[in-house]
Image (cartoon, rainbow, N blue to C red):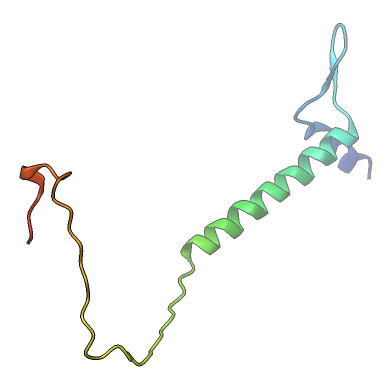
Length: 86
């Protein structure tokens, strides 16, 4: 049990600094261990969500048959070399 406590004290990433030395504490080791586990969990969960794909299929009936689509093109603000209908 004493060896486990010493290992946790050695995990302390931010030891308390006194005048001539620094001391690692058990609470600092526990905070470092807990925060490291939370960061690893968040990293792996975000990576899993990044790799996960969702395919959604929708089918609907187009009831606008026979209607025309109106397209308004304003040519005044377009520069000639960049304006083309391809």
